[in-house]
Length: 207
Image (cartoon, rainbow, N blue to C red; front, side, top):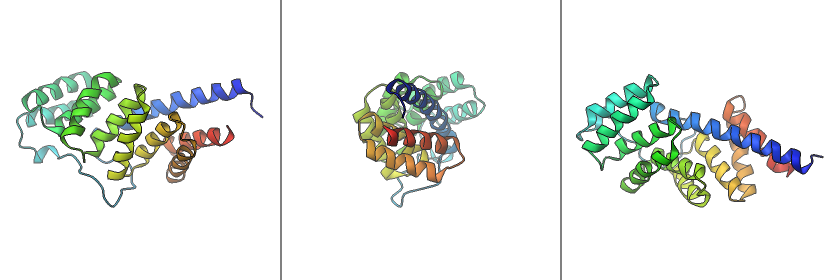
């Protein structure tokens, strides 16, 4: 039987690992479009592709995406900012900027842009998922749950389930967290998220 100190140490390590994984897959959302394979029947609006955008700032938005794809995050953020300055009410640009800040590990800077993107387009699942991740990292777990639940209703991915499980765990909804971790572990048994989810699920079951 584990001692309380051992369990606390193991839990802390697992949580740090989970947050590192969160940064990885959330950063990938912007580039991949849809990350994960399980899509809900009522899948929400996927933000427009660059070729569909007619708003001012489109060229700079496309340049920002190219820079981000090359890993030049600081330059990408600067380009996204220019696109947002030209079209401050374009949720696609705001989502791109917010997600780029997340890839740069700056959730505080990402927060206002993702929050505005959600207000402008409540069916933008990427903005909701990114915003939920930001809230989770900044300690606003209850609001994180609201955003992540909404994102999951719009588009169900293993990444979204993992994040929501993390939020449920932090708000004391242990059984809901276990159920979602189990779903992720079963959907991605050999992947990083699946293995992390299996570990978190075991820890919660043994508590």
